[in-house]
Length: 597
Ligand SMILES: Cc1cc2nc3c(=O)[nH]c(=O)nc-3n(C[C@H](O)[C@H](O)[C@H](O)COP(=O)(O)OP(=O)(O)OC[C@H]3O[C@@H](n4cnc5c(N)ncnc54)[C@H](O)[C@@H]3O)c2cc1C
Ligand code: SF4
Picture 1 (cartoon, rainbow, N blue to C red):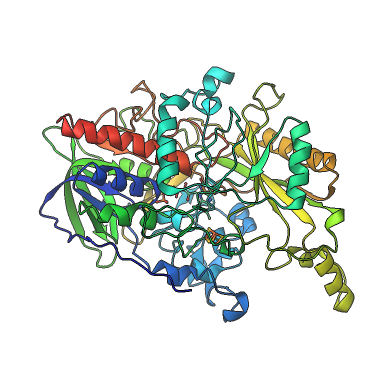
Picture 2 (picture 1 turned 30 degrees about the vertical axis):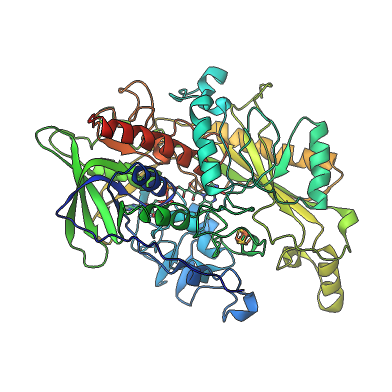
């Protein structure tokens, strides 16, 4: 089958002598959404992206079989992906003294390093310091959305009003009802697959066709229902029915790379920011894109203290340029946006722009993961092979702790992501004893009989978990890097103990033989769900942004990525990042038209 590829028809030339209505920094989920909403409101927008624009289909090669690749997907010699033990035994910066030519985060070691070697940053060029942290970054047009896992979940008032529920932390300055219409818009514009469950703590989306559960998953779903818990098909930010208004995307063919690679979908059924948001925004004629543009300072008008643009370094020629705009929107991702705010020191903003509260970089939160359970479904042993990894995901078990009940030892909750069935390579081969014909027979017979799931838990936001600028270390472009001061607390550790116990109980209740329980907590950062470094709030003394992700200090400065989140919830954040960005940018455009910015 031949796929027709479209190029954005109205690419604009960059004109740095001009003052744009808005400059957006970063082109991932948040920046792409800002570009989409603002250009559709008629604003002239310049989008600055630090990374390059890759011919992404040539990178992802979703249809390539392992045996068609010279190294079965491995990255070229001289490349290294940081391992779990390295993250824990050593201190960042992890790559500085490495003998390898290129060093990538752990995602580069997920059975397909060659497919992400140009997508993940080379840690040698992008060091960071401080406490141990597994920081996964993708510097290219579209950012991490090129390879994200696509689990697309909504938050509920258990999250937005967490303090009201259990007394910890701060409530968000918005409620679910404020965001629900924007979640709907994101669902309809981008497409999401899933199954309605009517859960107050995991609100439904406007779903397209769901993934089919496998037989073991159906069995577990039935058992969990008797326990008052919900296993639902993976809610995937994937269009399974197609999005007719977008010529750059195709509907999911269910043909596999989702379950076989570090991520990425070269027919763009899975949402990515370039095809989902940026190319359509370019087609309005209102968007100008400049890649290889590393923002390092928000420029300030010395008379008004307002933002007047962005100073950036060209990633290739290392020269510095200025982009002028009436409104500045940061969307460089949670940690990079905080870094940029801290880097932007001026007479009016001596602690960094937007940081009169001293909260920029603080209250960092994310998800804790590691504990999980593997089970054997005996009646599936010897079953004929079926295509189980040719779909955008397996299943999700919604949070069930600390909703109506109150656990001793920890507050908040966790969900499980899981899957089962046959996959392109039978993972059970690694643990199957023996060799020769008997070994192969045993591997084949058991290949589709395993089910596993792993927890994702809410990490509490705490002021003392923070990032600042390292006074000495700089990246390859001479820009000071982030220094981490961050570790899990007892709440996360107790929650993880419970994850392992509860996982086992659920499998046992379903009659699944438990063959492995993992109790290890993965390194801080592993979830790739970093949040909270410039939180929203009503009090400018304890928050950085208002409910529209607008700086309390500088009214024409907005930060529309996960840095604004007040708490992490246990649900994956990207759908919420985009719903919030849509809401804020609609407000921004209204205020801009009224001359209020
Ligand atoms: C392997 C993987 C699996 C994931 N799975 C899920 C999942 O299942 N569900 C989920 O919800 N989330 C998942 N995520 C997380 C998800 O990708 C992020 O939440 C989302 O991409 C965040 O969007 P963002 O725009 O804030 O950041 P990004 O997507 O990272 O985009 C930020 C952009 O800003 C650019 N940038 C950074 N600094 C600068 C600068 N100084 N100047 C100019 N540009 C800059 C970057 O190059 C990048 O393009 C996953 C991520 C990965 C890597
Ligand atoms: S299963 Fe669907 S979403 Fe996943 S890579 Fe294949 S076509 Fe894309």
